[in-house]
Length: 483
Ligand SMILES: Cc1cc2nc3c(=O)[nH]c(=O)nc-3n(C[C@H](O)[C@H](O)[C@H](O)COP(=O)(O)OP(=O)(O)OC[C@H]3O[C@@H](n4cnc5c(N)ncnc54)[C@H](O)[C@@H]3O)c2cc1C
Image 1 (tube, rainbow, N blue to C red):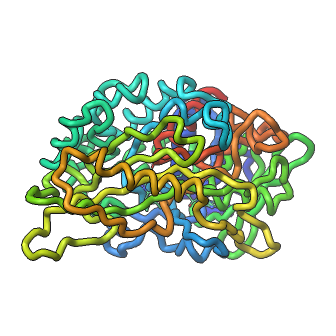
Image 2 (cartoon, helix red, strand yellow):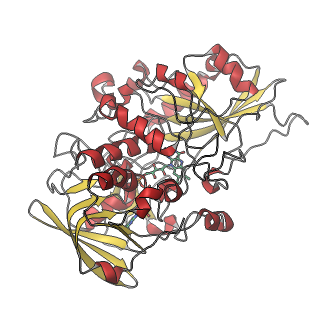
Image 3 (cartoon, rainbow, N blue to C red):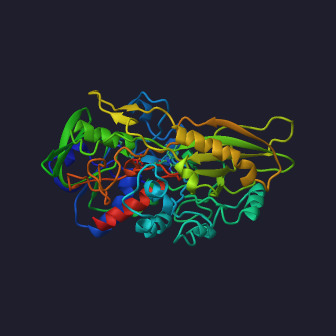
């Protein structure tokens, strides 16, 4: 889709009703509802990256012209992954779209670790449904046994492989077709999933990508989009955020606005606050993400890889329970492709007798893992690596594989590796009820600057085991509807 963008020099002299920083999941799902309620307000989106079409991304085999690693100084024992460009993470994401479990919002009060969210599952249940509708999520309605209020999905589930059908028969209440923002039936110009496992470069449009999937939003006459605009500062006086300073075309610009929406991802959003001297609640602290490990289950005499998409199933036996007092909740994704490499070579001719799985493990967030402003032009990121809480969770998860997958003829279980990053950035601007230890309140409004809101996964106070973007989308739809 063609997107008309405005130049920085054309936006400077206006006073804006709303200035939105970044154009990823948080910002765009916020705008989706906010625009409908405020069709006469003048809204400006400032986006650091460019608009790269899907075709450009496939041809270049990258999601952005800006190397995300060059935008941070990473002193962590792990990597971080994100995409700088119009649409943010909707460019590169895999399309996995799970809800969180109701108990994920109550980690501290139930299990004595981590932090309680200031909102509950019920607060966003309807918005989960709305986000699933907007992205045309394909999923199985029986997952409603685990996620209250989840009924039929807009798209039929991707079909399970032969192997997964055995698991489903054995564990009907905990194993389900994975919810995916990837179409099983083409719709509105988006094709069906071609199941070639290259979801970050989806060639058919099956996987939700905001630039194509939110056409009404881009065509709104009161929305101006300025790309190539790197936000550096938010200026504030007293309890009011007043202006945004950004760099474009080699110089700085300053724009004034009544409401400022900060959605520049879990590393760059806290850095903007730090550079602005807006230090309430400790922006940048408690940065983290869950762990992701790649395991292969070697099968004896049964073939895999005849499922309908790259990741076809998810197993939820241990996403909740008293074990969370001791170690992280765990979830198993069953993959229908080698997302992270791998091939069964021995013995010969048994290439398909393997079930690749991804295990996600909840981790705790620690104050010392942080985005830090060291006075330079880019954020310094310090993280000590996944904690014992996550490592113990992974040990637990692998020990449970013979039980969870007992319906399969398992020859061996091979833990291949812990991935250097799960691609989810969380916690650095967490929400909470105590202003001393949280940056935003339960409505995602900054604890002191009441016309500044933060969107995106930065506000998550815990990692949970679940992929974050559907929850981020649901929370942003709620904010856009209510503020
Ligand atoms: C390879 C990959 C695969 C993933 N797969 C999944 C998945 O299957 N399921 C899932 O739930 N999640 C997935 N994720 C995670 C998902 O992308 C993030 O959870 C989500 O994008 C976070 O939303 P956000 O709004 O916080 O940030 P983003 O979506 O990253 O948006 C931030 C926006 O701010 C812009 N920006 C940054 N700094 C500035 C600045 N200074 N000035 C102006 N603009 C700025 C960025 O360009 C971007 O547009 C994946 C991530 C990656 C990298």
